[in-house]
Amino acid sequence: MKKMMPLLFVFVLSLTGIYAPSASAGNPKAAVTHSETGEDLIYHVLMEKKDVHLSPSNQSVQMVLYPGEKTTPKAALFKIKTSVGPRWVEYDEYGDMINLPERFNATMGELYLDRRTKTWENATTNRTDKDAVSFNPQTVTATQVWYKIDTRMGEKWIGYNL
Image 1 (tube, rainbow, N blue to C red):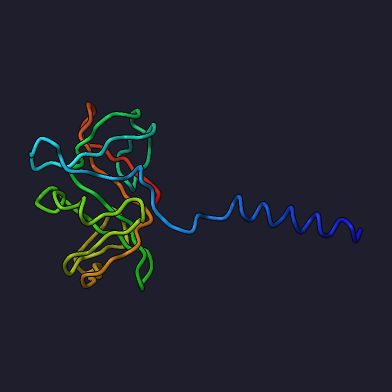
Image 2 (image 1 turned 180 degrees about the vertical axis):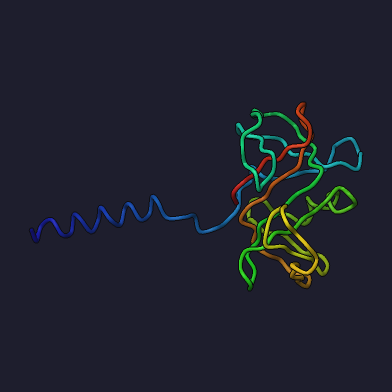
């Protein structure tokens, strides 16, 4: 039995290394970039097969997109870590999206809030201004990002864990 204990310890230690979350958050597959044509557009190129959903709140799969497909996100929702727990930040198509490549570091899972920013407890449902909590400019850790995209089935969402 005494000879088994060191082996058991090594086995458990090896599993800890395999199944432990990575030291840095982030997912480079969630990155967005500016258009190369000079248009005021950003793009997201899929690097893996992605399910397409009705919304972050309703994740029923509507269709599938494949690696290499280029999408133009119209809006983005980020789930972030805050001092009051997880909150959601929205970037919409009315000016916020064009600067997203400079604000969002997908590899590090960091989002820069460049001004006082409202956050909500829920991704897209039942949000009111009285439920909003605002934060001053700062860099926050994002744990999820969802992009609203146009598809042949209308506006849908794709999401990433960071």
